[in-house]
Amino acid sequence: MGHAFESTDEFEVPASAEEVWEAIATGPGIDSWFMGRNEVANGQVKLAFGGYEPTSGITAWDPPHHFAHDSGKAPDGRFIAYEFLVEGREHGSTVLRMVTSGFLPGDDWTDEFEAMQLGGALFRRTLAEYLRHFTGRTARPLTVFGPVVSDWDTAWRQLDAALADRLPGAVEYHRNSHTLGLRTERGMYRFLRGFAGPMIAAHHVFEGAESEQDWQAFLDTTLGETR
Image (cartoon, rainbow, N blue to C red; front, side):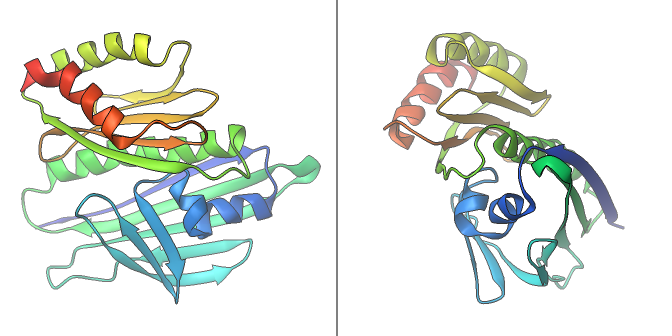
């Protein structure tokens, strides 16, 4: 039967409309808050996240006010679309309105929709954190797929304990049953419950030499007993 969906988020940030546009409509900007590596060129938005490499067609381009792109409809009707509306305010602040919509085919869409909604909430909150704390800076995205987890309650508890040592003083800016987001002066560190079972780290590092190999070792050591 399938399921159509649409969600809207709106927030005000202490950044100019031009700075918000750089964050939402350029590859380096999107790299700094979304996931994986991104490229905006030739009327398309290209993402590379692990082995996942979707391409979206740009459907609205009016800098710095309106940007939109979507995946196009698959034969089974599946699609996802993103729209960003940017309104500059007095004293250098900007209101950003984000609309995410799409369609999930089939009768077994419930789990995928839940994962999409909970993961999407993390990405949107990360964009707000970026525009409030790191505007104008470009992050180096780190993506790591950790162990497949069988006991998620235990995995989150073990992760929390290990992160207290790994990222002392970090500010928790987002948490739900599938995701966790932490902020330090040097980056944003995010953990997601992967749809196929692994714990995923999808970080944005603004300074320092930490690597994907460092975080791979951290996840393997921290979560090895939850497989």
